[in-house]
Length: 335
Ligand code: HEC
Ligand code: HEC
Image (cartoon, rainbow, N blue to C red; front, side, top):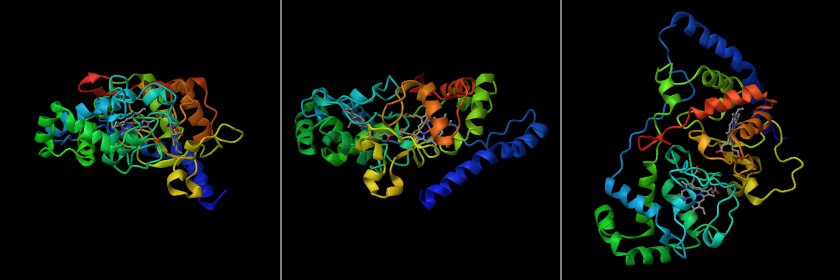
């Protein structure tokens, strides 16, 4: 094991041991002296709050393009085909199915709240939402097209004339198409989860069980990777950081290499962007390889491989209950 990995492992273990202690130290005085005044500012998860500052003309154009099948070579597959906004922003499959029924090699993450990610894709290979659009359009098992074809088809479609005129002075190009789609995606946020209401001070927004689940989420150390506004999305970590996930598996594919495929740095092998856990109950199956069919299974795998614990069914179910309180509202309605 390299020095860095060793160091990280030790850090993680220290963290696990120190965590309960630091909670005692931190939380005890708070419960003692502020019984009726809940102060959530120290919580490692923030309520979802973003200012949507997009040009409505670009957002409307982006919405149309997101649902546009002509972005695929044979006019059958839109972005929404794999990112169903009424089903958690993903496709509910282990691996996605693209043009001509072709099977992909990795699980589709949600597009909801993707603006909060440090970068896009499991391995972070697209720095921005604009850059990400390149991927599916050119991917032979997703949309199987190319920019020239897409620009030609969209330019020939009369219904887009006025929309591009309003949003981009009539310019139809890879750049404007990507910008419009990204503008639309930045509006796909899901605020006002019950857990957010709890963080903002509504003690009754979540149940006693869900509160216990949140405490366990912290004391197991899940929070060291899944934190911040998106409850994830802001760092890369190895799948199997404490207990090797891949040992003895003979079904590894290229996508299991994770960030290594981009950087060719050995340390990055099997590293993935830590996914956001917002709306997680809606996006089974889980993990980049779609291997966990249920949230219970995903939590057990995480407990074992990421924090080195064999979790009891009781703790697992409490954590799952907490995770379900992270489901937010899309356009004001329950997701
Ligand atoms: C055939 C299914 C399919 C289609 C069509 C598709 N996607 Fe995806 N999308 C995926 C998969 C699979 C991934 C994960 C790929 C990876 O990480 O290597 C992904 C990843 C993403 C991500 C990154 C999310 C994250 O958390 O990293 C965004 C954003 C996204 N897609 C938006 C789009 C847009 C916009 C379109 C249309 C231009 C589109 N997708 C078309 C399957 C699809
Ligand atoms: C060391 C960092 C780390 C810790 C600690 C950690 N996770 Fe994760 N988590 C990840 C990474 C990385 C992934 C993505 C792995 C993959 O798909 O290959 C992930 C994925 C998940 C997923 C699936 C998300 C999806 O969209 O498919 C769930 C659910 C989850 N974690 C819950 C937990 C819980 C519960 C704990 C505590 C028991 C925990 N995690 C601890 C890094 C971590």
